[in-house]
Amino acid sequence: MALARREIAPEQIKEQMAVCARLRAARGEGERFAMVDTYGCQQNESDSEILRGYLREMGYTVTDDEQAAEVIVVNTCAVREHAQMRVFGNVGALTHIKREHPERIVVLCGCMAQSETIREQIRRSYRMVDLCFGPNDIWRFPELLERTFQVHGLPGNRSRVFEATEEGAVIEGVPRARDGSVKAWLTIMNGCNNFCSYCIVPYVRGRERSRRPEEVVAEAAALVAAGYRDITLLGQNVNSYGRGLDEKVDFADLLRRINAIEGDFRIRFMTSHPKDATERLFEAMAECEKCAPHIHLPVQSGSDRILRAMNRHYTRSQYLTVAETARRYIPGLVLTTDVIVGFPGETEEDFLDTLRLTEEVEFDSMFTFIYSRRPGTPAAELPDNASREEIQSRFDRLVESANAVSARLHRAQEGKTLRVLIDGPGRSGEYNLSSRTAGGRLVHLRGDETLIGSWADARITGSNTYALFGELV
Ligand code: SAH
Ligand code: SF4
Ligand code: F3S
Image (cartoon, rainbow, N blue to C red; front, side):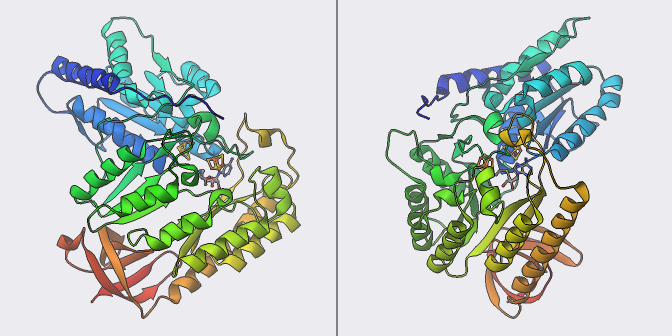
């Protein structure tokens, strides 16, 4: 997999900034609005911050109000059929805005846009989309938008802009408009080389490529200096960070370097692939006092046969060893996971292996998905054997069991006093503050809103499946 690592040169980003300035000047005075709607994972949330950063450079005020926005960007996800259907539904609904205001621009970008088939479908059936580009083109959004505007400027010319560069690159120095002021995403790498047989991500996000550690550390230091208290390092498989870089550096090294930054902050990361989660990583986690005692370690299935068919490169027993080792190194570790139910060929026995594994490990929380066939992936060719009803029943049983485990683990926290970071306003009835424990458990609190952004001690007074409830002490 030794492909050349392509970096977008700083001059290329400068050119994009010049386009932003040009667009801003061309549009003149008066407040103008733009919005970005995000689907999918944290990577996409992080990409949307770049899109908003560029829009701000173009002089737009970023809004959530679809009616007011002159530019509507939909940053899409292709991981499951359901996500795609939602995008198509919501983009389709923009027809009426476009009818009333034909000058408005609709942009569809992100993972769906990387698929040739989907681009064709948009070209043909979603005429309201003016600009469509894939994740590898995000750094040149200004240039693409300018081209779209130019086309729009010509009376009667309704041609549209469609781009999807195959090869991914590393980008530095792009503007970002971050969501929030307490928690920040920090992308350390892009793409994925794992090719799990069910997954579309390697096809839409390209090959794995890491940012240089000094760039990552500089961005982390800038975030800390700007007052961020909770930094999540992002990558599809952070454990393989550093491959392909000239400097010999791995994820454990990177954690240590970020941990050495002065300041009062916490480091989180996701996602870790169990096949690459080594003792070296757990050692670094245990040693770095700023590293949150949390690991998201997607197991996907508890059946060796299915794990092999998924191309996951570990067995049930290896997974159990990894989980056990992690807990040994990191006291109070919060362990979370993803599971797919109904992979082609999964039998009731395979499913029971999954159910038993999750009950044995006792995950703090679990994201459960029904397998979704992704055309172009190897698993899409495999025959289904279980019926929809059977798969739904497995899903329901797994969720019920996972919820019971979460509720039990949460109940065990009652009466304890935990250190939390108050990270935003609350959304749960009379609890007006939301906070997280070091391990990432959600704690609803009551208190003064000026406390947002600070650490506090909370006595846990209640709990449910999803969260803890507490009072400040
Ligand atoms: N790189 C991360 C995230 C991948 S997408 C990882 O490896 O964990 C997040 C989750 O979506 C995956 O962990 C998997 O559980 C789920 N997923 C991916 N493809 C899927 C598919 N085709 N059908 C159902 N769930 C899927
Ligand atoms: Fe998809 Fe597997 Fe890569 Fe995760 S590790 S993004 S599940 S191919
Ligand atoms: Fe979806 Fe793309 Fe993330 S497919 S899960 S937005 S990498």
